[in-house]
Amino acid sequence: MVLRALAINCSLKSDPNEASSSDTMIAVLEKAFAEREVFLTETVRVASLNIMPGVTSDEGKGDDWPALRDKILDHDILVFGGPIWMGQIGSVAKRVLERMDAFLNETDKAGRMPSYGKVAVAAIVGNEDGAHFSCAQLFQALNDVGWTIPAVAACYWVGEAMGSTDFKDLEKTPEIVSKTADMVAGNAAHLARLLKSAPYP
Image 1 (cartoon, rainbow, N blue to C red):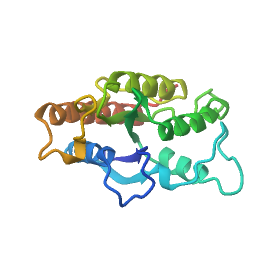
Image 2 (image 1 turned 180 degrees about the vertical axis):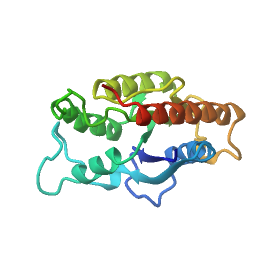
Image 3 (image 1 turned 90 degrees about the horizontal axis):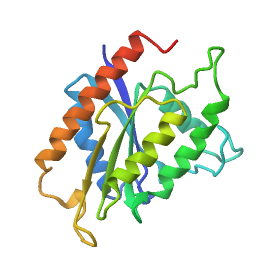
Image 4 (image 1 turned 45 degrees about the vertical axis):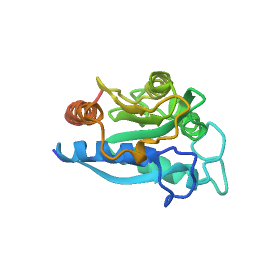
């Protein structure tokens, strides 16, 4: 069973052509997923879009969220990438989570949100402490709005506190990051296939 994944890069950098450590981490996961017949179709740089503030699925004229929402829900797996700022997940990621709050009121007749049966994992980078807290923020929020979180669902790298080296600047991917990416991809692919063949009741 071939699966499709979509990555969202919640970097604060709005130019998709500007190098981003979140993109680098997403690429590590993309390789691990491909080995399990999960194909990442695209990485969306969220800050390059006009994702308006709010908690509905359409905040009106000029809002780019409806199209991104449809794209996210058209995939089996969401790779939620983003940086740590001030010890927590960045503001762009929080905007995405706020917009997903609308899922709570968009249930089908069985009470299932549109995200039911879909899997989410995290790709987190930063030069300070906060990887575990950022993942906790993401996973609790995503689970609240219907996403399924697999075992070992986060691949992260944290550089030296107050350091100047970013993940994208490393000469090669640390072995522990690659091993973790393999676990994340393997568990997410396994869970996504199970949910696709046996959906939630």
